[in-house]
Length: 299
Image 1 (cartoon, rainbow, N blue to C red):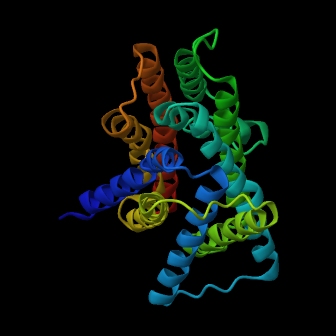
Image 2 (image 1 turned 180 degrees about the horizontal axis):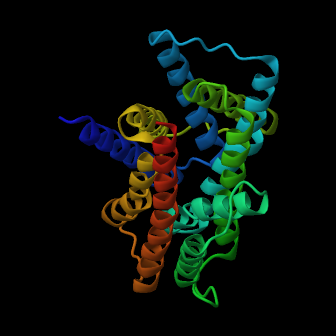
């Protein structure tokens, strides 16, 4: 198997892993779990798995005090908050709609990068952003008829928080190994949700066996497999190509939500989702071209 195909398969496995998250959250709610129980269990199990992987691969996990504080903040304020709002949106919306709203984050990252002066607006980027947000209007409907306002707010909030998390991580942690950083972020989120569970008493211990198995599968497939898959793909196909392939994530979520949850998606929502994917592809394709140009200049 060529390196390119191997990297492509690894990136697709990562997308498939992350795509299962809304499905497992829906299953968890169905067997009686609440948001706090889902998030606490997910991050405790995922954090434990990631620390074991670092130990198994003999990766030095030490970071400076400053980096440790930054990673903790990213875990609590960034990834933890994003996960909480995303899980909350799934309580009110279908898994497919929540996934499509979260996947607005590449467009939001582009807008924030332009505002912060890290990037420039050009015609291609303008068209891509216009396509993305036209897709959002199609998904929701101009009048939001039949769509939970609370769910939409949580879904869009998760995309905004994730965008800020990505920008902050890229600015603050360029010298920290990505897998190590992710392990610290997950651990910080686990500690935060565990503390919240202890103080509030909101953790549900009486889930059926199917509930605990669902949460275990969520930690393994939706978190660990997703994270390791994308990291393993990077040496073979590079970050930009991996990001483009990762656009398959919401498509896979939609297919699984239809086949496993029996959800239905309306033609306008399907068209809106396709528009968002098209806009994301244009944005990330441009990033891939710029990276290739830089590599050519360096050589």
